[in-house]
Image (cartoon, rainbow, N blue to C red):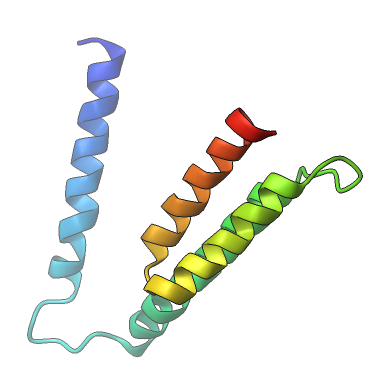
Amino acid sequence: MSQPVLIILTCIIMTFIFRFLPYFIFPESKETPAILIYLSDKLPIAIVGLLIVYSLKDINIKNYFIPELISIISVIFLHKWKHNTLISIIGGTLLYMFLIQKVF
């Protein structure tokens, strides 16, 4: 088999394992541990914070940073308006890509 096929098969197998592993670890008869409930509540915000820090780490403020600033404001606005993390991230990313390719 070629390397791309092996990579795709590995991704499929790992996705399958990680999707069904919780059902084997926590059968329906058991109650979900409090730590998992806590993590499922707090991790999305932590991940968004990590993405913000990672994407802004190489910005030179002395040069122009207007596209980044506009995109950050749009993400905040979209999240406050729609309360959907996925829409916020995709909207901000699309706006940023448009700004750096067509405007600035």
